[in-house]
Image (cartoon, rainbow, N blue to C red):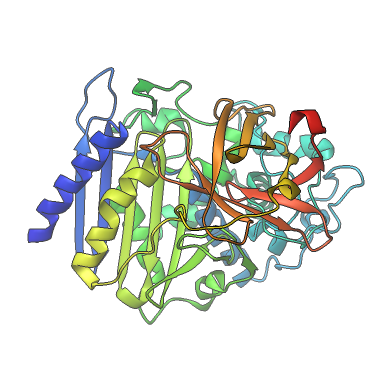
Length: 445
């Protein structure tokens, strides 16, 4: 394919601009598979990236876990309306205990209300997931179950534990038995000792190798699959064609709105949903310790696209190559990420000033002569990122939709002010609800 050569050049250019040492682009379209590697897997060793290199796909794993849950529902062994208390008796979720209210459907759609960024490391043993779940008695509830969408890693660990209980295996063993082997997915692993015997990418941040290599084993069901672009394409193809089983089709029904502002506007059973020029798109992204990934499945175009990188910059690399690849194949325009609107008029900014907080981050929104800004302060037991202050730049004249970025070379990140159904003001950032917890004193504004 002549276009593949230009995609390789675009991939190399996007990686260079974003400081990404290595990446693999995978494309499946109408029976033709293309995999393009670039760069090195590890800047310390200089090992070259190849088609069979394995990368951590992070939270794309959640769609794999959801698929296993869908299989259990199809087998009649579980219901979407089953509660945590039904399947995991004795497990407590916060005070008051919500285990009798949070359902499988809530967990799959990120609508449980549970604080989603509990990253407790419970060791390397086969009991890592059960020990994690036992520790959720103190988890906070951000809002009542079913009220809204807010991205929740915690919920998918609970789903992983349900799989363990119902299958009588570890989540890892069930993954192999239910998906990896019957779907013939090559080079899929979940543990570092499995990855190290393959051509494995190391994560990078600001050009330096990140340690530790992986996330805690307890988070397996939420984000520990490591695999190749080829395996991810093979996995995505399960949602293409006219013979997709009904239990997989049901995973793609939109159930909650997602105010992201790019090509995602709803969530189904784990899948994030949107449209490209009227074509339904299934997608998910993933991020771990210095590795990030993207997956898009477009059934109407018979298209699967994935991108694996060993840096935090998958969005910048994705924007540099995927829209052009899709246009070359289909003439369809991939929606652009939210961007500043220079003509936007945004009065009454002071209504947004205050402190918004969830477990992993404290967001202090302030107003000055230049408009709105936010101090972002990572918190929690597993700190993600570093403290920073960014300006909020309006996307439109609503006064509620903004974008921000850490530096000029970064893609814009959307932030949206809105109100939860119970009337609580919130700042929707990084796919998560951060409720208003206090107004800043006047002298801090």
